[in-house]
Length: 112
Length: 115
Image (tube, rainbow over all chains, first blue to last red; front, side):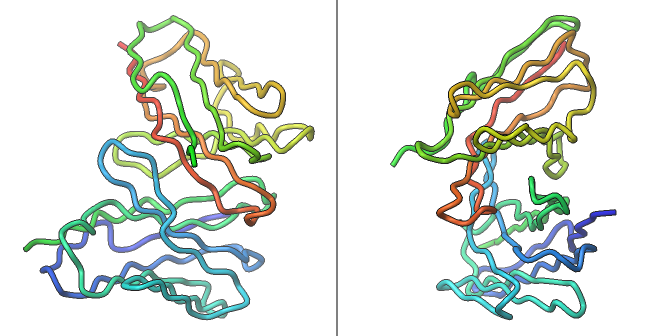
């Protein structure tokens, strides 16, 4: 069946360090992989996404890498700041193409 | 521009009562999704609307849950005879075919508490 697994569930880093969150997916036909950031009491916010025709995408301090052979993709945050503290979710489309399947989330804590 | 809006932001109801949750998608977005987020959990798909096509209801957990989308815009999620396990944050998202089918933008959610 369709599945997205996300690791780690919690991640604590010092301000300025890098943070990496990894996800694996089960459906080899998946072609779109977004990452969402959710702050307390708010809805998830799309921060970056990648499609299957590229291996890496960057936007300032965040980047996403995709390995289609291994069916995994990762979020990289460099020079972390306290405001990066939030829950991060990865996702991939369901087989019907009608919804996203989400990982269970990673709580990132950046201490100053 | 205006994002996805949801109302109410919080709803407390007694077990057995019916509730209605409203979602106003981004103007011009043809696709609308409902998800449920239980405490400390990821997002669980409930239902999907796309234009005039039949909705994908495969994620609805029971026949107590239903949703409609009137005029291709506003959507209402209805939960009948609420149970304590229905307590969760209900999130609505919308997307535009022009922006990429899967680029979903979420509202702030409705926190439902069933006592």
